[in-house]
Length: 311
Image 1 (tube, rainbow, N blue to C red):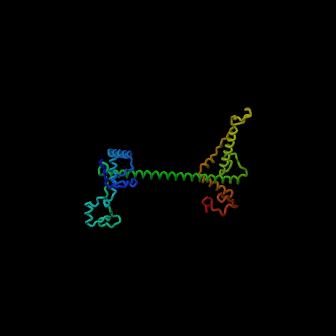
Image 2 (cartoon, rainbow, N blue to C red):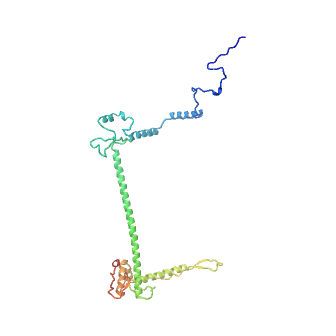
Image 3 (cartoon, helix red, strand yellow):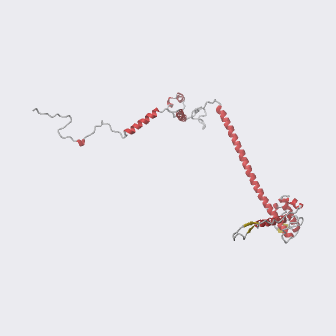
């Protein structure tokens, strides 16, 4: 039998091979962490994005954004400013980016940037922008004028309202002064308060006070009569029952007094002046000083008008 000769494998040794110290060659590609499902989904999305055809609105929007970006970028900062023939020509003539042109180049208000480009996006004529601006200015002026008129009308209404409130407050104040003066005149003439109005029975200076008091008494009695129209009915088993009763209204016919009617038609200031003159002539009393003087001369009294007593 022939003898088998062992074949020497290149790189092998006679000792037993150690698999624990086995080194993986660097030429083997490392596996990525992305799974095949995710990779396939990403490929599908990329294919759909390439196959998607932009609409006119999307194309117009992209065009506007690109144009806006270019217009907002300074000529000296653009990517192709080095190849700009006009800019290079100006540089050779001594121009420096950031400086102005002309004899007034050193002025503060001198323009240091080229004239910007204004894109015309509509189909109107060249002069239509000025016409639109003129119409817009007219509309703005009209609105401003209308707003000013409204403000003036509102201010006038507020001023009129304040003036009316002031006038009403002044009327109430003068009416209170008149009633107080008439009460003083009544106390000087009579010791008792009169509740019955008789024409030509009392002096004209305080006759309207008696008329007003008689009317108040009449209205008070009528109010009491209206309250008494509801009575307690004992025939309802001890419970309260309302039974209407015909009210007895007191007849009141206001007597006619022509002299008093003419006096009440006067302005309240004239009536106050009349009562004050009556007090000064008959009782030597000044309603503004609130003093009864001992003689007709009424010394130390500044005058018969309210304005004389302001100081």
